[in-house]
Length: 222
Image 1: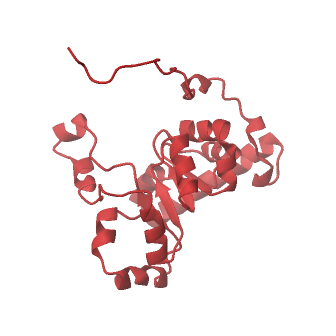
Image 2 (image 1 turned 120 degrees about the vertical axis):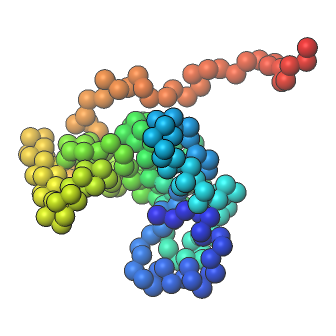
Image 3 (image 1 turned 45 degrees about the vertical axis):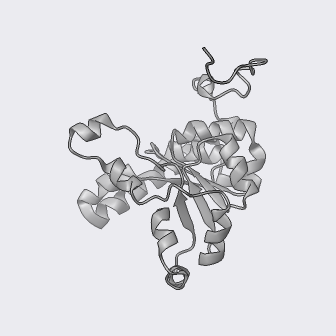
């Protein structure tokens, strides 16, 4: 994963060594140009969000995607796309993939409902809150290319490599059992028709929910 501040200050020759090292793609963080207000974190003396934000270039624009691709010679995935409009822009500017990280499953569901063609034009990854094999299967059913698992693996590392391998086996077994119960033998057979989303459909943003106000004034004049 690449924080953009480091990208623009490093020589192109050094960046070229990234591909030579075996890196297959670059994930560019685009959802944290400024730190969010995390009161609980601040009260504990943390401020991790502010620390991370210091390493992200706030001047990043869509045209920089082509520069990154040209400089590194690697596919670029935009991490943190949060809207259908953002996904469409990613396609327009030639990104190779997007990663939905914030309320990922809801954003994935919205993207599948409102802009299904996106899934044929770039790869769609999700992460954030996925803890079970059933979660992975649901995301794939909605069109996700792959699912990132973070916190469970972090906890598993308390037991070292053995813990990580054990978690992997748990997830594999969970996916296997879920597939059998769904009556499928391959992940290519899973689809949205196997899901019931009625409990969360009301959370999906509705386009044009608020019509434009005819002749709306600008700033206050009084």
